[in-house]
Length: 525
Image (cartoon, rainbow, N blue to C red; front, top):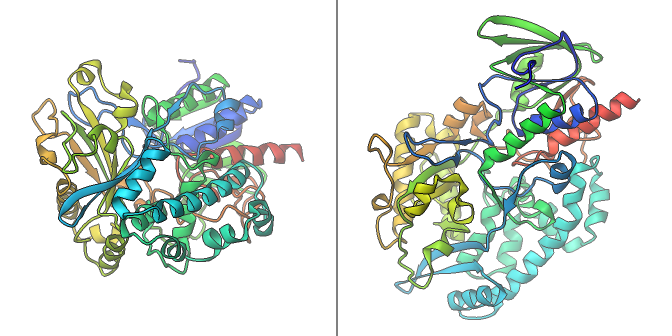
């Protein structure tokens, strides 16, 4: 560890970055590699933010991606530019969705090759129509992805510039102008197929398919453009492998990363800034030409003394599990190793999603909570110790939808447990054995399962309202007040490089890259 590691070594820096999450580390690495003096202030005793790997179960050698868990929006450009020792693996199966039809367990497996997917659609729907519609729809989103994704690391295009780049008026109307529910209902007839399509519009986003605000469309767009393909990949070694690689790149370029240093105030005149921080030893301050805030817009406002933006609200349940074995399925035509290697959809039919949203909007927990599950260790077993791998252990990650933070306000612990129980009951309905029988136990004999509500994420990670995107996702084009890169604030030398920036959200590094580019451009003027 370098002698200057862990504490500020100077009184003044070219750039101070508040927050050591993945976006802040991306910015630090870019700026340090460009020869700038950089200090990262992180309040926790480790970097990574929500993109970390931890061992949550006592005495068990399983290193899970505790919060964020898949990679799609991280541009290969960032990995190449920063020389990161980081890899992802693709998933052969995209998704499996179990359902009971005519009293018989069946389901839809997407993946394993075109012929197999086509046959799966035919078995479920009784014909070729739905698969043909699926191919046309995702052919369209694939074309949009190829055109839009490269713009994320460029200055913000105008709305009309992006529209010209998409160069498909039907696609533009479908994704950018009409509620996504219109296209889903026009193009697909089967309720289950409709639901599988809609889920990408609801990840961490509490909305109906026909919400006039189109926040569901913005969520859908970011979930289908990643990498120019829309594929969601598994980070080798867990999500912490990415942030560890970023921290290494930043340090090796000369950045100082000071953990246990909490920024509490930013004073600036637009040209120079003073950042006050707190440690176990008291308060101190450093000066900087530029300040990059890798935190929420609410936290930025608190640091600068500005009026806070409207409240944000998260809407997800995150559950991490370790199993002694994968459970058998009622649908015996599908191997559990395939079903769980992609995204395993539970209670996510189109009508089920609408009912869950309506119930939650009325202040009640959904009667059939929708969720999606995947098994990291089927694609990347390196997150498990060799002994666990040899015994056939596996991880399961569950992400629940339509559970807004407001539902947990009366009693977070009790509501979380009630929701967890009903969510797992929905999964059990499709299993040939109870999931509880498959759970591993920790060193103290407790089941290896942990759940996190939006309020837990707000407490642990300071995500406003537990919102994994910090606020509603924004369209990836310029609007009034967005600035050239989408990271600008009212102070010329204070930038927002967290998920709340325009083109933020997800594990992408895009706001960090764009904030660094904005700093380098400003220095050239």
